[in-house]
Image 1 (cartoon, each protein chain N blue to C red):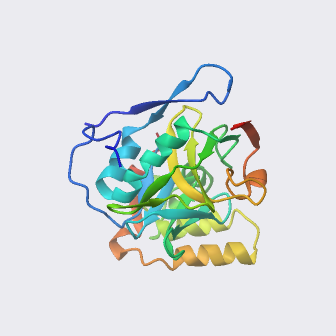
Image 2 (cartoon, rainbow over the protein chains, first blue to last red):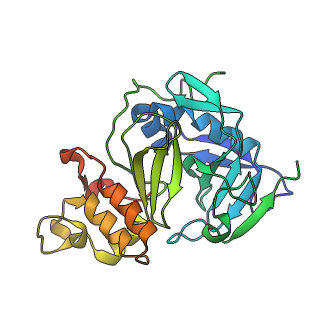
Length: 135
Length: 138
């Protein structure tokens, strides 16, 4: 039986405070491991983004209150099984986290026109920007 | 590339399975027909098309807010066969979920083409319905 995996990241409710644990639920990671090998490999990018976050957005779902979107850019990712390539400059990798601080979706998205480290249409999709890296 | 952070934590033999599945943590239905990196192309609040990161072709879709759709329409409203009440429903139609999601938004060309693309995916016949038992949010 697989276990949840905890990863330290910026607290979206207190970005200047200590880092908090965000969980990769076993229900999610096990499914990817068994049946979506490339997506499982790209969980590495999700962990990288949580550890090297560039933007945090809040209010991510039409029917669910709360939740955050963490975005960033890994150096490389798996294009196919055993094929690792540089992460494309016109994409950003995003990690969605629910109010229980569980990761539920990790994926690449097209970048916003006004910010290459934010996903496209962030102004209308999310309720707002919570935090932005100064580096 | 260094070892995966989950290496050794999950047992089994990975085998790509191109079939729809319900993600209970995200309350969404996911279908990917290719085992390759994808880029999410968001159609609206409920539908996202996955495109190949290599050549931009559509390779799957995601429908969000499944629990809310079931609350709104009832399981009987998302089944294919005529069933009198929610208790008798055993499977939910993925096509019905797509149609229900489409009805939530404005009738625009972009939405229509996005939902048409999702409907045209060649989901295996035996996987076009999903068991109600699987549709339990975390």
